[in-house]
Amino acid sequence: MMNRRHALKATAGGALWLAGPGRAQSLFAPAPALAPINARADRLMRITVCLRPFRAAGPRIAVERIAGKQVIHHYGHGGSGWSLGWGSAMEAVPLALQAGAREVAVVGAGAIGLTTALTAQRLGLKVVIYAQERFPDVRSARATGTWTPHSRIAMAGAVDPGFAARWERMARRSHAIYQSFLGRAGNPVEFYDRYTLFDAPPGPRGEDMVPLPGGGSDHFVNYEDQVRDLSPGQDTIAAGQHPFAVPVVRRTTSMLFNIADLAHQLEADFLMAGGRFVPMTLASPADFGRIREKVIFNCTGYGARTLMRDESIIPVRGQIAWLLPQPEVRYGVYYNNISMLPRRDGMVVQDLGATEAFGFNDANEAPDPAAARASLAVIAGLFQPRTA
Image (tube, rainbow, N blue to C red):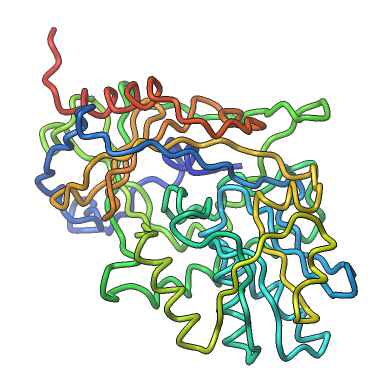
């Protein structure tokens, strides 16, 4: 699959051009003056680790009778929870409507829990969210924050024949909903330029094979072409028009989530529509019986691996080094597998790995300070003159 790392390295798509009198004209504006990124190690605020809840067959959206309740499972979105949440909820919530529910419970207050609850409210249901943790303590708060609906969403050999079409519905629905957040106070959703840097012109890439826990290997599905019209292409920036000490620079534009503010706004919207949060810890499926509502959405993400004893959920580890915010930096960079995003709540620096197997089936949530400093050094080196 063309996930976030592959998308940045891709040569397909190219630049967008208009035919002009005698020459082509880029649709992108000229490269602006770029403020340098201050990636000194003493500006490191914190290091966070998130385990993405990956399922080879894709997100679990299924109904099960448990403890006298109708439980609608809605979890397992890999690295695409924020990106697919709204569209995935539109696949799950109608299952409650078909059951004649007027009041529903949502278990879990992360990205999938909040988008499911809000979608249910918009469709006329009364909703209560039961959760052990809320923002900023949920795993969703540690996500990268960029729109990547194709990031580690399923394995090619495990999906059913209809999954590609469902995924496209999810992606397009979510993309459309996020447009309504543009321009809101706090900038919960915005667009930014991103520069992909190379030491030499890149060649074509094949699909990385990933070893599976039960044996064998597979590769992630690649559906990115199905929604290519939602994102601009790439523009090559000529030497002398950028500050980077590399010979090949390409630019595109991507959607970025200010997760701190986005989560705050989603919670506020949920409460304004009459929703309630109820603290609750569920230790086993039998605890669904403690919930008053008869129809329950199980949106527990990676927590479903323990709660439901669902070993189809495979952890995919990701670590972020958070630098102090730099409001003057409104662009991202990607170089040598290291990504930097200009979040409002801090500069997000992340090692995405040389292959798709990076972090796969790794349940270690302990921060690695040495790896964080190494990532910072890569970004810092982009703004230092190279000696011959």
